[in-house]
Length: 191
Image (cartoon, rainbow, N blue to C red):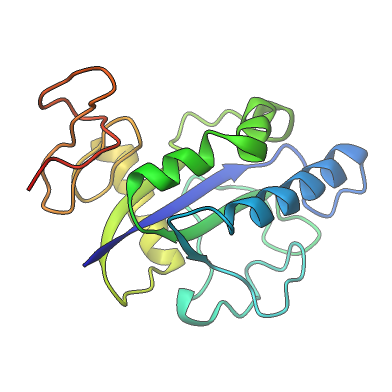
């Protein structure tokens, strides 16, 4: 059996330690989103730091999720006072539950406001890949897949919601639009 790994990465307009109301709002919304997503069918888990300290991403103990890493294009700070990024690493049963969680409810509302908090970098902000049952993806895996997606586009190794692949590497179908073999599906091809 396979599971779906999802890595997200965004560069924030201001550091996580910024006392401005917009930063606090981002945290408050983020906490509500995580609570809701963790209850979503198909959600298996996400990387959490042992101490949960805001901004101490690089120094935190992430356990089986590995040492925290960021893409090469991140050029802002790495201390608790200067870190200006938001990253997630999670596991899902399949693409459809992940899509439903991301594009509905509180996360959808947060996506509508993303440019209040995040810079437009010209880089992808999420990447998926399949992992074997029992495998915990690492932060380094997520960074590597996101950079591969940026350099090479969607492929079975690293893909997006809209250009997705089944665990066997075949493009998925989009039954919502009646496509036969079009990448971008949220359902697997019949086996």
